[in-house]
Image 1 (cartoon, one colour):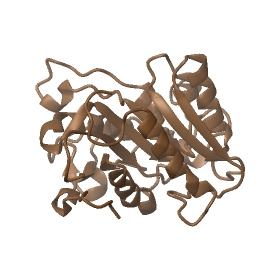
Image 2: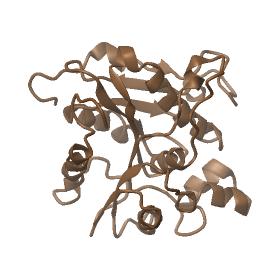
Image 3: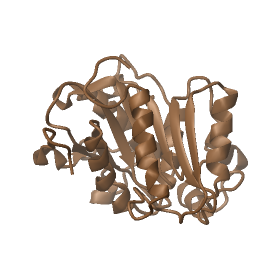
Image 4: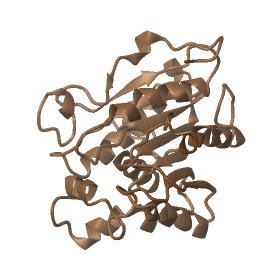
Length: 283
């Protein structure tokens, strides 16, 4: 539910293809699963706002509904536009999901005028494997090609901030085997596993990050978030890390868990402290 005076335009919840028909790179079909898209959830009132691309989890095998639209509506309630990403999953493999996430960020920036988005405040949020995709987008990016024929490709794909929720981070230690297999195949070479172990890819240019996990997560070990946070610390990238003592994997907003459900309030406070919520200018 949105606060008084703030509405979402229902017409804005139609999926927007990231590439025209027939132009999807590595495309292997024409069905919905072959056509990556973003579904905009736009705060109707107000001026230019921050935006977040939302990446549901699902082990790179599917997309979890409870980590999509409900999260977008929560972000709307905080005064941020949200764009739920339908990215390609198995049998698609790397780099297809990463290209989808990068294209989503470029697309949001390209349409910043009609969507009333501040192009300097575009972040990405992900759960589990969607968190891996978000962390990959935050450590593998470019600043666009000014000479590209496609105007979308002229936009940079570096996110301005990351929100990582019980994220898969590493493919060399404490990993989620299913996510790695679905993304890279049964026996990926070590150099590829390390290239997509995002704790090894952090630099000083990695975006500021909010992370949360549960200490006894039986699906994706908490060491994934701890390792990424440690790498951010080494490179002096600002971060906020929250580890809850107990909680199952895949909680999403965790509305039924009075302790873990606190992550949304803590994240909202972080967004405010970073100047990312509400209709504002600047960063």
